[in-house]
Length: 112
Length: 113
Image (tube, rainbow over all chains, first blue to last red; front, side, top):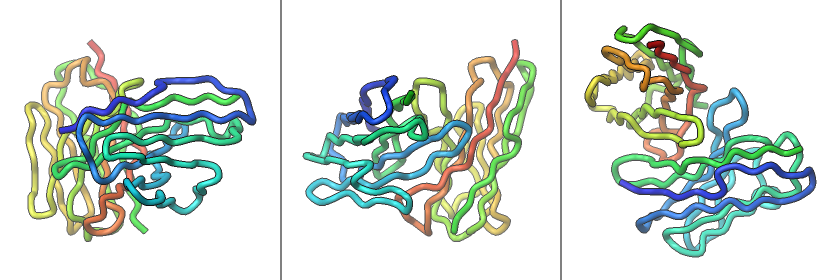
């Protein structure tokens, strides 16, 4: 199993600002994922963060808007840049273990 | 493109009832299927993982079945309790054995005391 600490748990931000979300895992993992869950919608994969290389972004998501860092095998950050109200969502990090996918507790972001 | 549908979107039952949540997926070439529970402010918790070679998995009062040929899975909850109230999500790999998952929108379950 894996224990994931995600911070902040929630934030209210002003339009045009940026927010960095942190994800800390209690063990070394190769692959970390960042998901977004918009209100009333399913989770959508933003990107895959691999240590030592640039993140791989899914269709509809770009590095300028969602820069990701992965400095080591236990930590990653996702930044939501130049925020607009449409970015109001829950953002979740997850890690893959041989058995299952584990998720952080999520960051509830509201953009005014 | 893999798509996952969950029915019903919401369900309200009295305590003690047995209930079934449904999940369907469009591409049956999956390696596994997972059921998750989502509580507000607590992220997602993996409940059951069914490998493609399995037909069902059980954990306590939960039983999940998988029928790959028909593209369906069900989550059976026995003797429901108010603490079971949450949103239940199913997810399958993007393609085959991909680590990336495609999620349904979930079923919001309310168990009334």
